[in-house]
Amino acid sequence: GAGVSQSPSNKVTEKGKDVELRCDPISGHTALYWYRQSLGQGLEFLIYFQGNSAPDKSGLPSDRFSAERTGGSVSTLTIQRTQQEDSAVYLCASSLRDRGGYTFGSGTRLTVV
Amino acid sequence: AQSVTQLGSHVSVSEGALVLLRCNYSSSVPPYLFWYVQYPNQGLQLLLKYTTGATLVKGINGFEAEFKKSETSFHLTKPSAHMSDAAEYFCAVSEGAQKLVFGQGTRLTINP
Image 1 (cartoon, rainbow over the protein chains, first blue to last red):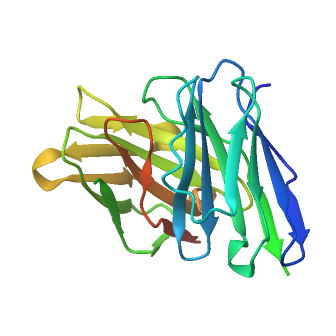
Image 2 (image 1 turned 135 degrees about the vertical axis):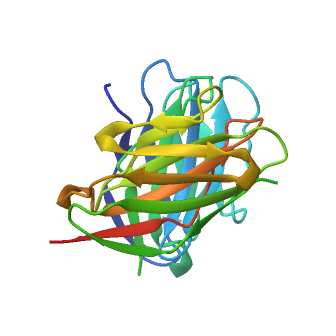
């Protein structure tokens, strides 16, 4: 597609439930990133995929968070046993291999009640 | 590790006035520097970037930024603010790997 697509745009879930957030990057972009944006916390790096290399998971806040990228394209971020502090906007971005900057999706707003 | 500090979480200017959003970075290698803008309920949009070469970088919507190595700064400016510039602005740095490190953001308000 023309841009980075994220779904759902909004998700409300009960504490303790698992959620899956989806990201469709720009076709041909080899790098894909997940960030979390919380009020007053800025943009927090979560995970980075580049081609077939092992992902950089250094930003995942706990083992309840995981992500995969299938076929070098679509990515899913999974949060297990959600907690209220997981409430945030989850942003996905993709880029070509160079360091020219990312293209961001519109994000998924997750609310844990 | 690299880091970014944006001075001022909120900046307010009058329409037509100069916009100046401050960004200082820390990096152990020559950095790549970026400014992004985020409008309400939207993702981030790239305004401009510095990689190598000319230190004064021009971006979209009349914004520009100057890389000053001696001051480790990359401040964003626009000569004349417009109401449509009201948004949140993020400075970011990358070194080596492509991962970007963002500042905390500056919310820009434009007064009529």
